[in-house]
Image (cartoon, rainbow, N blue to C red; front, top):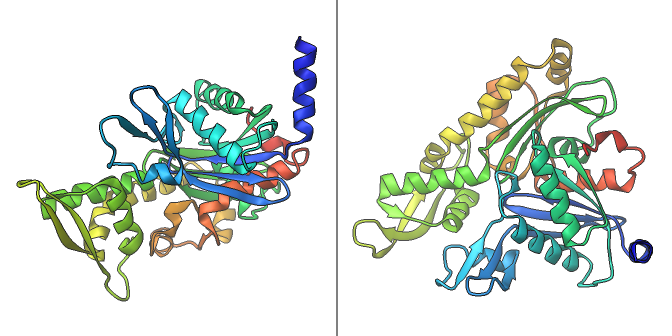
Length: 346
């Protein structure tokens, strides 16, 4: 029986292409060998509260957030970059794998998954088991900043210090990389989600209006900034008056959003400063010459690179496509696993 199962696994493996996955708190991206990124979907699952049946996954399920009736739950199974709900995460991964393979069932790919630095052994096991339960025949883990460095084309194999700041949905990863290893790393649980929550709190305090996470994210993307803009921006938004409960439209300016984001941005800046304090002098000198690289969706915030440059007085580079940097880096490692074998952490 065991031999038959092993043979079946080898046969199904012949019909599959290896994959790399950026399993993020906000979004999941999948890179397929030889094809590049084939999936980019929100990490959300909508379930029936009555029987646990999956109603929607990904982009469609994200529209359910804050809008579900009592019998439906819209769940984000990843929290702060790690699995918060094992069963729902496994269901979500299975759906995404099938979608990447155009719903073909007889595939059992090897899978590389990007995870936060500092992930515990229990959390590593949860990721591996969840991916295996979803259909992967073999699972490898790579740290997100390492994948980001590879995706950005940094010379990770050389004895040269490279600093990567990966700002995702649940965590910000700050890492110094040299000789295919992480010399220093810190993961802070302040990133895109916390920025959205900061906007929600600001609007509630200063406009006495309650808004949902989707509306806060829309405001952030439309007019959010880390530094003053050359031309002021304003956007129309809508929410519910706290005192009356009546829906109301209102206007919010880029200055207000910038004030709301001051605290989470400050936490990220402090984490970068701490990284320099704990980095050996020679590696710090390399970074002084080569600069700091920003990746992740948070790198798209207007003026963040300029603010970091003024604060550190160092060159700061925003990756050309920061949303996909980690997935592309994990994909590059997957394309030549023998060459990049040192970067895997399991």
